Every structure is written in C-alpha cells, then in structure tokens.
Image 1 (tube, each protein chain N blue to C red):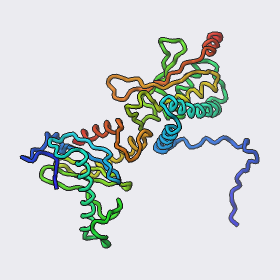
Image 2: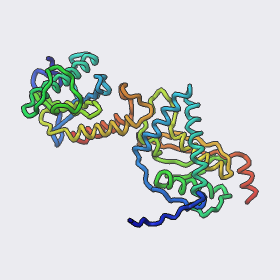
Image 3: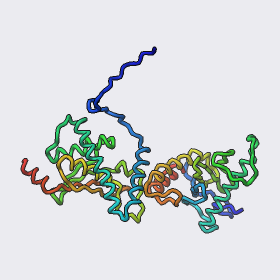
Image 4: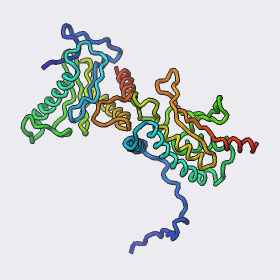
Length: 194
Length: 169
C-alpha cells in the first residue's frame, strides 16, 4: 500500500490558517472581467450618473473586505484612528496590494479643509478603456473611487469619493484624480484629537 | 478590377525615411465583411466612395484567399472553387505586390482581417500585422464601451496604431 502523507484535517474552518494566496493575477483576465462588469451595468441603467454609482457600489464592497484583509495581513490588527494615518494607508498599502505599486501622489486640497486627492497617471482599470466622446465625463475609475470609499467607511472615516480626469498639458491622456471629501464629524473628531 | 493606391501617371514613391517603407493605408474587416476600421496616412488618389471601396476590398480578399487555396500544389483535398472557407483552411496568402504598392494581409483565427497597403519596397510585414492585431485585442476587445461587430472608435487604439506605424516607417 502506498503511504500517503497525512494532511492535517481541520474540523473547524475557522481554525485553518489564512492562506497568503497567489500574489499575481493575469491582467488580461481582470480586464475582461472588469469590461464585462461595466457592460452589464450599462444594460441595467439609463444614464451615466447611475452607471458611475453602480460601479462605485461594486467597489464599495471590495473596499470593505480589503480593509479587513489588509488590517490582518499587513498591519498586525492595528486600527487607524488618525486622518493622515488612514490616508497614507490607502495611498500606499491598499494601492500596493491591489495595483502592484503605490499611488503617484497624495495631496491636500487647497480650497477646502476636508478635501484630499490621490492622483495616478493612469489607473490600472482604465488602461485599456477609451471613453467615446458622447459619454462625456464618465470615468471607469468610479470603481476605484468606490474601493477607497469602502475602505474609509469601514475604518470609521465616512467620506464622499469621486474619480475625475484632470487634463495635463504635454500629455495626451489626462491624469486621474480620486477626490476624497470627508464628512463633518471626521474633521471635528480630528480637531478634538489634536 | 480597379487597383488603387498611389498615382497612375508615374509611380513616384512617397517621401521615404531611412527604412524606406511607408504605410499608405490600413483596413480591418471582421468575418462578416463589416469594415471595422479604415485609416489612411498617404493616399493621393481616391477613386471610389468609402462604402464601395470597402466592399471591393473585402471582395478582392475573399476571392484571392479562395483562389490561392484552390491553386495550392501541396494540399490534397480541394473543394469547388467559390465555396467559402473557414479562417484556417487552405494555405494563407499574405501579400501581393504591384509596381506602385504592396498589399499585406493577415487573418486571425477569429476571422479578423488586417490589410496594410504600403510602398512596394517594403519587406515582410507579417510581424507588423501581428502586432497590430495585438493592439486590437488590447485596446479594442478589452474596452467595455466597444460592441463587437461595429466600427472601431477607440482613441487609445488609433493613437497607439499611429505611433507604431510611424515608428516602422
């Protein structure tokens, strides 16, 4: 009889160690899946604003889960309580895990106190997508905006997050900016914490 | 049959750069004969209106493919001339050349045909057409705003295509 190595059988699924998983995913596979997500959403809505909202909602659920996963894996179950802390977490850790690199820049808005911007030369999800002229300012980066909103919301920093194209002179493709506008209570809490 | 591209009076090659081959124009058809894409960079003479032009081009290639497959001395089984062929069947012709231009052709297994009309001194363009097909897959097929079977209107595809063609000219 061939002896088979004993695999430790866990009776309770909660006792199994969390797998690190494969670190690489095929870009083509993701592009096709995302393309199909956008096309499916297009059939369900009547206008651009609703389409963006649907993509954002899809991203929101991803963001909530990503926060749980990354808090466990990367940060040793520590919780962010400060505004700058959570922003740099999103800007570097979340971006690194999702897109393979940190975001290009994180800036504080000059006009309003509660606005912050994460910019990227070209969002990974938008790499193969060209928007026809008649769709105006529609941006598939709404999905990424939803992810950021999900992370912030689940961490206790409610915010309104949107994705915008910002034209840059000298470059044909506009840059993408994720605009984060925090709710009142976040700023008040931040002021209280000093 | 009307051959087009370049002037009829005296075949004067277009202004050549170091490599000596310049793309004149490009067509893309799908397997139903719909012209997905047409782009011209250097076409001094227009003889037909665009619809007739596309139909003629598609018909030409369809017949040429059929003819070359039937005349193949190496393959055994040949159907009747005129029977439509599947994309992989028969030998595949890849270019013809006249004194004023060279037409290169590539057909993908999904029936997408890419035609490049260039200067007659151009070398083998099979790699170029393969690369263009790759560009098509990346920037058109993966674009959720594009409905397959309709003419291509994607900026990314056109920009990258222009860049690539300029780089090989």
